[in-house]
Image (cartoon, rainbow, N blue to C red; front, side, top):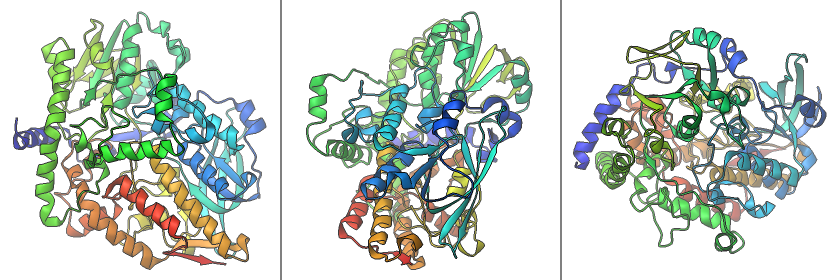
Length: 632
């Protein structure tokens, strides 16, 4: 099949899946009628949190508040400490009951990182930790977060959400309102705290969502239902470390979703369920994983010099941005010679696409994608024995449209007699019922339903206010969410914006450098932010009265550069709906010229993560604070 024929096939499949409501087709756990039943923290030790992870008191004043205890938050804290700030001046706040971010919440069977652990786990050189496998399992990743926190003596306020953020110009401080909730036996504790610097590192995969369809509450009231990010080991039996789900014997189990999460869960459920129904809207490209243990000989080759982790991360980025170098250090499915088309999601420094070059760019990306797509569809046909099932598991969209998956057991699970694929041909399930799930007009009665349906991903507003689901009010009473959606939108390096002094964030828009390996992206953000704050302190006589923000001129200039590079990412507008493409809301055909410009200025750095990192490191090494205004 030619690239042109493939493109038309892909567009037919895309049209099946587009819905006018876009991301509005989902509800999420912020709805208390569902969240109170399905969203509670199953892992928290409330006594430990109360005793050791509640350092804040009402009316406290601190120097740094970092929101988020995952990799982003940890890296921000560590880089600030390395820049000379005191550990005791930093407090990390998170709604979770411990460190780890998404790896705290997700403890489902089969959980592992699909990116090599040697480049994904943060601060391996600094902590001296050696991952047990090439691809780290979930408990080990969470353990590294806990190790980092202990290594640096980090303080954290857990089980706490922020409810309001207000900049006080006269005090040069943020006034933050927080609520710590330790459960039914404890009344929520409401705090108001001042912080000089506020860093939002809440991440992007932290609010579970599910299809907003009739009958869901009836199902929840009558059957066992849980989200993959709130796995109920008490119900299934087993544990994350030993996932022997003996309680599922004799039960009919359903799972909605066939994305990166479900691909890891399905093989484990298939081992224990009497019957497993896998409900599919859109198949995922699945390649072999080839997991292996880390041997001393291999580790000696990997960690062969100081700075090896940065070098290896950069090497990975060369391949996934279609700019390969002779040595392929990671050497896996991400960096496979025919997989360079996945740069469509990240950007690339190989070219800046102009408006008159968009169609050629899209055509060339589809041509580049043909070998990878055909290889992976053939892989499905070779593994899955039933031809009809294999056909339904083959993906038809560009390789940049959804996160690629790698697993050695997922496709094989469909050869088991107790596993049924319920393919909905792009429609998704119809509805829910007190006894199960309705799909293709048929009721599938279940004992338990697993929602591997992903997370609320903030399609339009990716500001800190959206990340924390709380208002952020800057100078002159301006809401950051309003600025994000206005013609005045702009950032400097995607981490700060004019009108919101001493506010920084780890984001995925506005000219930030994103990556399939988010840890490496967070590290670049954290090094830039630590530099800006530390340099400002060196220049100020009164460090306690500093206010730092980008100038409007600087963020406008940076926005021009972001806009100039954004058309590399125009291939995303051709994508089948999914969280990468904002459920189709990023499509260009129904946008006015003004809306297209706004989308372009909101885009990530279109020249890719390596070019973004190079610019950030050049900025840091040059010294100074070009583009930032410092007031004392």
